[in-house]
Length: 106
Image (cartoon, rainbow, N blue to C red; front, side, top):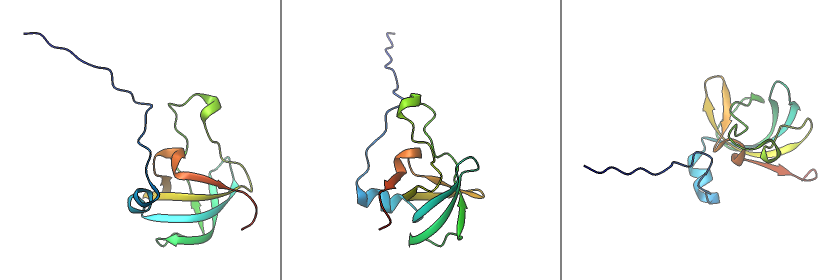
């Protein structure tokens, strides 16, 4: 018997379309980061779901990426977030790839 194997690429992810992101999320919000160290965000606008006024983010950075590729939380930054409830917190779909920075106040 001859067996072959191939490597799995754990750091690769599938790029989702906007429709797929919406379908995969139970909550979509525009939120402002109020405490980056504690991963707290104030919900400014709800586009899908029924989240509380303030949420705690979990699993929001892809730990497999190099440091220079990671997207940390930044205090006072506004983000569009595609989220799923996870315990007492909310996890962006596809870790940091479910978070999008918003420039300006619109």
